[in-house]
Length: 237
Image (tube, rainbow, N blue to C red; front, side, top):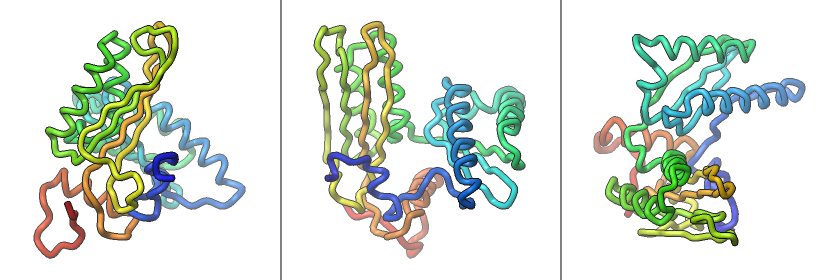
């Protein structure tokens, strides 16, 4: 079962939580969900060169708080904050709520599945060998501290007439272990021969807390540095 389902969906309410964090009545739910989808699609399209990993949307009372996790925040912010102000105005026009836009830097893009998958897709579109792109991404992730990584590519690889799937793995990726902190992402490379699908799984350790927000707190600790002893949580290797 763990090999068939989305690893993120399987771990929701165990050690992960949703990227859309709000509650709405039945009559408003569909409109807000569609609004979230449009906001995410717009940000990914508008900030294509910024390496956007996640877009988290929270909706306190009559407000919409959008947090963009990106590998290159300077590209979004722009000179003296001009670009982020333009982006904020465009997003504000898409919602009736008061919009707040926050930018969070991803300090280790080699350990972010979405950024790794997008990087491989861009290399394939530039006609880089798929084996070289896969191996380079796997080596970079392991060098930065990943305990395991698996990369799948599928399609007309190298322009072959018959589509096939190839994969490369280092370390271990325990998909059946619910406490495992596994990041997963899917990307597509649009090549002259057709679309090539890329899937990436990255295993970063184990989260012992049964708490949906545990992974987000752990990610914040990795960015800010180790937490003081006795702060709770931890990882077992």
